[in-house]
Amino acid sequence: MIQVILQGHKNIYDTRELTKLFISEVEIIESTDQPSEKKDYVISRLGKDQQGNLQAFARGDMEGRAAEYQIAVKEPEENLSSREKTLVYDKNQREALRSCLFMVLKDLTGKKPVWGIFTGIRPVKIVQNMLEASRNYDEIFQELTREKFLDQDKAQLLIDIAKKERELIYPLEQRAVNLYISIPFCPSRCFYCSFPSNDLYRKEGEVDQYLTELIKELKASITIINREKIKVNTLYVGGGTPSILRREQFEALFSALQELDQYSDLKEITVEAGRPDTFSVEVLKCLKERGVGRISLNPQTMNEKTLVAIGRKHTPQEIHKAYDMIREVGFESVNMDLIIGLPGETLESLGHTLEEIGKLQPENLTVHTLAVKTNSYFKEHQELLTLGERGVLQMLDKVEAFTNRHQYIPYYMYRQKNMLGNFENVGYSKKGRESLYNMKIMAEKETILGFGAGAVSKVVNLKTDEVKRVPNIKGLGHYMDRIEEALEKKEEILKNFY
Image (tube, rainbow, N blue to C red; front, top):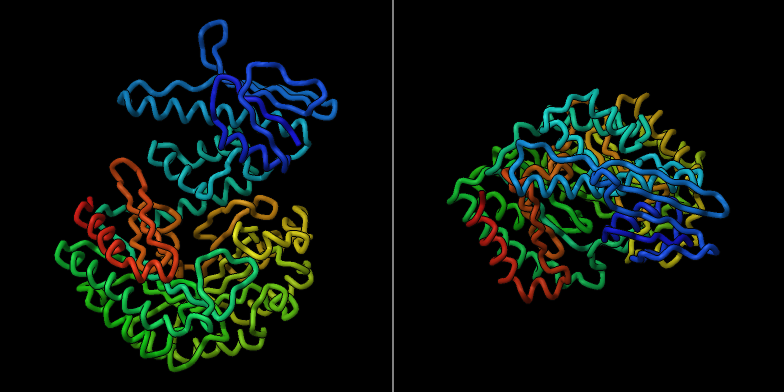
């Protein structure tokens, strides 16, 4: 336990999240008093020096070790408006406080988190904002490593992905959207999962009712999109496990979607099939006929013992069988998801998974570091998660070697709270086979309209760089009972679309 005392500021959230990278138990207090000599502590202070310049300062003592650090708060540029100056000055204060706290905690603990002072989930956005401020890549790399304390390989990863975004999703389009369709049903719940999903075998009778309400929500929005001539770029059907739907259910869903005037011009249509035990040639042919070009098959691991340990009801052999089915039907773009840090996994078992993936050669490979999510089984049974930070790092190094060997290029990334080792999730792709939807949802530079229970719309205003979250109701029954609320939310978004 360490006590962090705030003086002259109320930057509680940033302080707690950053401190937890070093020490799991944190007590944040606001006080002008000096700490008890018996406690491990850090003072985080914002105040003026003798010349009247604003300074961030941190000083700490832990197990007899002492450290301190201070940084001058950068002044905003003179050519900004009053509102912009206020926003920039506030941001500069928070960054200076984080930097001081980081350096003191690093000296006290001997640890150096690879992502430096970054605690947010979309660090590539920071690089894009620097580029929009006319910074070049060399300047950005220097700031990331020297001022924000990122390891060099993480700084380079951000820059490489920012370049890929510039290549594929810029120039940005204000009057353009992407559609996300939520199918919140699964054959069973995986132990790492916290997404809103419903056990298919307990809720099977509600699937048709749910689709009726979902289609109602879709058709109402499509009518407005067609009338207002709002451009639609990509479509993603996710879950849950969408491939639990029968052919006739998919046909009903896609018949509604094909009322979109621009349907045949969509740049990308993805269906997240997910679990191989839900696949059938009949459903895959239906999707192919409806213009779906990309299928996501998510094994997470190719080790049978681990599949049992995470609550999966299929075997590695079924993964191969499902993959062969996808190829036989004629799909040319396949994504596969893996999770690093699952219970019982070792470098050897990861090596087996990568060897099997290497035989298949999917166009996309998304590598997640296990995140201990609040509503997941693993949150209540963390004793099952025995892999330490060093073990996770060794696994990620093995993945990097594999992706380099098989010519996979990183094209999007994001981070989550409570990830093992505070690492990251990275999407890799064969050259030219990147998923535009994945890039757009992570970049938050283009609006995503979410349809169905638990789906979240993210409305982007490029003029102000603001992102407004508009969530649908999560619960399956509540969503179906209150569908009119979802319709009203979409109408409000679309009638005021920028």
